[in-house]
Length: 390
Image (cartoon, rainbow, N blue to C red):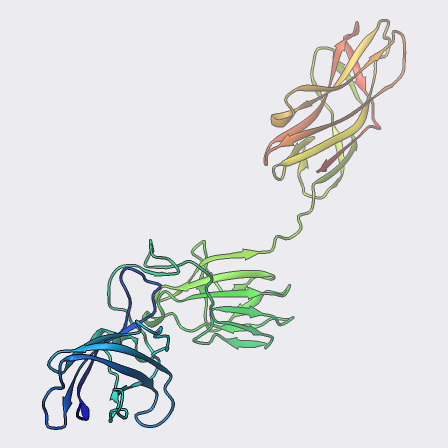
């Protein structure tokens, strides 16, 4: 066979993926023609042609190669490179294709690979995919515009400086200075609409946004990153808006009330339900007033203490009770005590019980006579009441 030369080489599609198997390696469609020196087509037949990819137009070492048995008709051939050896080059720079027929040298010049028109969207700093539909990474059934079945890496920065300006490639910024740090956000513009930022304050000191602010979840303008907190922001094209975040809960002081009986209460009618009068000694949450406890939050509260009664001139057996009242107390007897006839002095009644209360519910301590032959009785001074939040 006469020596031939490469007359025409057309690279039609770069990175054409198999529709039936998205995980397949990229393939490259190439068409060309081979002619003799006199311009006539080489004989029809099957030729073993070796294809090689280089990063230079001459010399150098091939970064990929494969040999295919190619059927030529009228000198014209069409092959799909990557069917023999995986075409696993990154296609992130210019490549040159060399072609060799057995018994001859590699044809020159090497052909420079060019892109198909739509592949041009992958060239340059801004990669734009003009086609419609969903994109899946690690999945063949994406249900959203971009579905990733796997982990995602984003840009992050850790700063201990007293001032930090958020960079163009930052996504998660760890603020790690022990004192205040002034953080400057990029202006929210149409160019960065949709950009997401996460500010993570690793210290017990709030950090401040300078020369910028954001709209928090309540719609108010905010300029801080809470101590040991996280603020997630997204640009809507004109302002930064908070989309989420976390604030480390601060320890809440528990409710604690301690009271003593105010004074002796005399001539209490036998048939009445009597609210015991207390003098407040301690009230950490300001939740006790007018002898009534109001739950500052939902929880379990424990009531304990004692009161005593005295029935002068008592001549028969009697019984007295401590009751809980209010919206949470439910008018329930919590403790009772019997007094023998003609006892003639104060009798202590101890009580201890717990109530499950929702915020705003109330409880009071009451005294009642369960059975006596006297018209009135007395509640002596000297008792007490302790309320604690579990």
